Length: 325
Picture: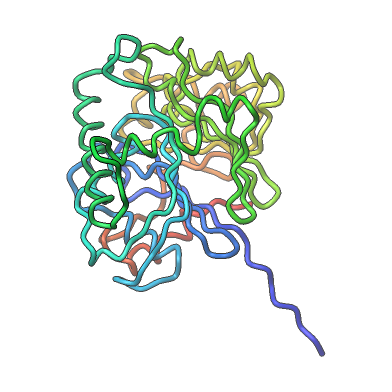
């Protein structure tokens, strides 16, 4: 009697180390075991905390504490610290003993500190810390950077940019296809959220549209270009589910599952934030504030790691953060 080995599935995790921090973080594991990170977080409670993502990556990869782990691709959506701060910490504090490698960076940030993209002082401060991290990581890992340049400048826009997206760029990492759909435009001006890199992932026969922090301006551009072609099975809710794109964008996406990377203080506050309004848009006019198979809500997870730096603690909670296809 013969038996066939079961083909491994692509695994997608919308992870959160705790319910309080404003952040977005995904880890994808391909069928061949390659790891992909989208953003990583983290602002708020985790801003100055010891980086959590090395332990989370090893847990997803099935490795033990201290074992070498490699990220095939790290996507950054836009220049806000609740999306890139974790990566910045990992790179700023990097030592050879960390046993972590990052092969490719995919992001395209505008030329901040110019008249077209002035950015705020706090944003520039955090972006400066990220740039410091890139340079430190390059120096520690032997990456050659031309004199007078920074590693950040070398990789920013190198693998994904407005020109390649306009040409219909797709990025394949094993069986996972990333359809690059939109990056920043001069019309965004100082709207850093609308600078968000928008892409759609094709995973296990399903589509996941990542809006990141896309604002009204960026949403308008996206809808004008794609219209009903925005239709996707899953959608990462823009700007943590509040004050992001308009209802018309969500109507065009017409998703079955809504992914809310949302802290508890946003989820429960309909006075200061538009979270209730957005929930009504995608739940047939009902302010549905409970997680279910159609609403994955990070702050409502049943469990978070008891120690965010522990691989074993992450392994215990990852099943509850895995997207079900």
